[in-house]
Image 1 (tube, rainbow, N blue to C red):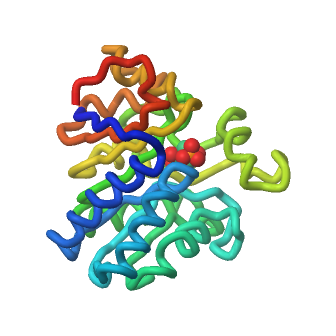
Image 2 (image 1 turned 90 degrees about the vertical axis):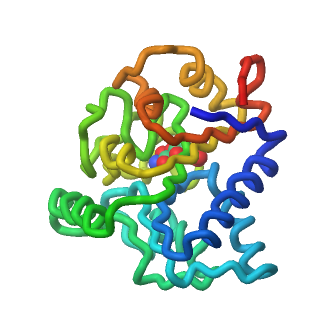
Length: 246
Ligand code: GLP
């Protein structure tokens, strides 16, 4: 895993966005894996600004999101489909038909998981996956203990993850208890991974990732050490006190 040290959140977002933009310019049909949460917002803002200023086109880009809450439709402002539409897709020239987010309101969530996995296989998988990390090391919604060989599946969200995400809802009770998520095996099939880590709350997760040698299902992000092409971009607050060799 290569690590790039950014000064702060803004710098991390700019470095990551520039990297993605460069990849899109090199490969206009790139398939991007996208993440939600607070961390990637700055990346998306930079991508929009560059699109407006320099005209980088996303016309032929395909995107696949990591996860979605079970029970929330795309019109619900807390759904990840809504988040993606409003924070990125509506402001660039991407064809919405080429943007995929698991559907949280299907009658048959297990079938939706299988369809999503098939869709990824049909398109030969993701070229570049953007990842955030949970304070407990979760990637996507793969909570500690998730077997590394899982494909897209339904998860029961942990109390700590619901608590962490409650800031976007009116109350903790409103946070869904389940989500659909790409599995760890799905994420590991991406050809390249960009992992973004920013801020005080992620310090311990980054420390575990960089200092513990074990690859353990109790700390999902540790699986990334088995991936051949991972770049971590972390800001100084998250890195604080760690010795990193970029
Ligand atoms: C959420 C998402 C993850 C995200 C993580 C961190 O639960 N499912 O994909 O990476 O938690 O979120 P944030 O960036 O808001 O800290």
